[in-house]
Image 1: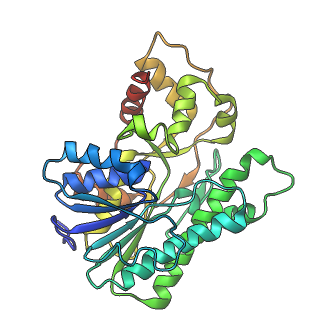
Image 2: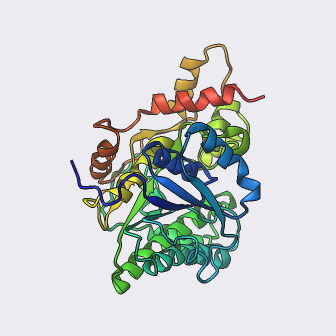
Image 3: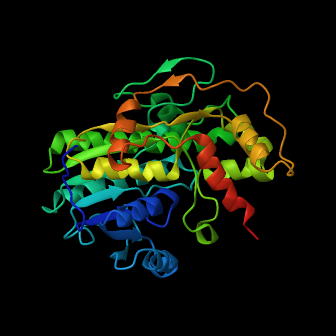
Length: 346
């Protein structure tokens, strides 16, 4: 077995804990005996999360601190004192001005690294990047991605939207640019400053699976794509914008972060969370199998598998360390768990 760098009982600092992936990371850490200090913009508005974890894990130590602006100099310095690890999940998801949104993402990532560098107790930092920081999907065309690949095309289009492309793609390009620029800035800072801690980044593709507290979190992030296919609402647009690509379950995504955090064998690595190819027709087929009496949208014509090939074997290897030898969760299982929550909504 690999060597543990951070042992149960240690305090881990996690940003964006009220979001889809952040909440799952907290859940998996508490499950494994770690204590968590979580950052949110407003503690009062996120008290529901503390109530959830207090009820689920008796004796677990979960606390929240307010970090209203992750671009403020030193915003994390006090909050991380006494912690052994830092998982930076928070990222801007709203806004249309690249001159605001992209620098916000970069500054947030760098503030995390700078705070960790000032904190001798921190051994490891994990940054939540995205598949789109390495590549766009490439349906029907083979495209080889390596550990050193970055989405330069997405960066260019995010900073300046192409005049000959539809505006409904602007948000996608902007997200590609902010994720690419922020991750590149973090690796550059690590190379130039050589701090005392290890650093890893996680690049997950679309997350499908259980939402921890759906009555508070709704259908966040990529869960909204799958819900659109379930309800038919806005599916005509979403089915056009979201091309065939890969998925990772919400829980596997969290576990991948934990593996990168706690094991010394994972150092200075980019882990690609690409579990299995999906497209909307595959998701619709699962829905129809599970709910034969429900009417769903028609299949999207002309879909072909994503031709992107990434070095995801390493990610599955470290995932197995945490999951007692079990590999990626299957698309059918993740979609089944996710859609069960859709059916219970009132």
